[in-house]
Length: 253
Image 1 (cartoon, one colour):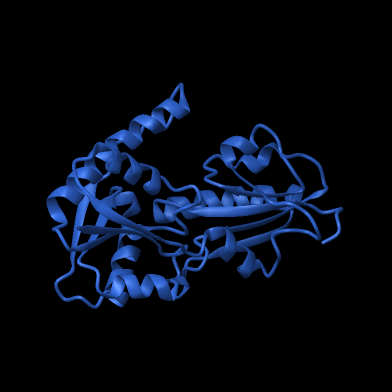
Image 2 (spheres, helix red, strand yellow):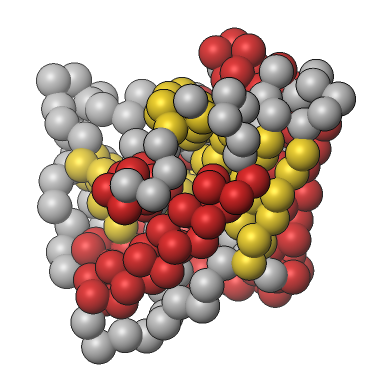
């Protein structure tokens, strides 16, 4: 039986990988990587560096496939993502069936944690449903950018007895839902839609890496600065991964 692991590898700091993940990587036979193009070559290199640090099996291979193109401005966002996942599932199925031998252990490395705004689990479920290749699935959690952000800003995500709402920039643009809102996948600086002087922001990009950038303060004052920093950083690197917490500043912490 083939074994497939989906391993959370943290937000970019190789020291954030758990002992469970290190143990899984030590004897791995095959690493599956999805190439997202030259703009994100640095991300692929971080994965490769992680493998070089923790994989001890000299026979381990890295198999790379190109990520299918995704419509970034669809009329129907949900339908576009479903179609993109179906394309990825076809690629994953072929990689697992053709490259991973019976009795071997392969892995997909996932930024942060596989359970939080990542599509790998859903896509692997689609592969399993095809019934063309059998494998035992194992999921190993990782430290998320949300956890790393809070640690670097030295804050708790929740206020006393208060809930935390985790959402995307696309949803934040429809309104701030709650007093403590963590925002991920925000390509358009949706915090610009939040008005008033009673909101603080704790923002971070490339958290845990040597390129880390942190900004915090009143959203009304820091928002324009963050927007410029973000734009400059993206132009410099060709990509950006950022996360932030919005918090009503009148509530008990």
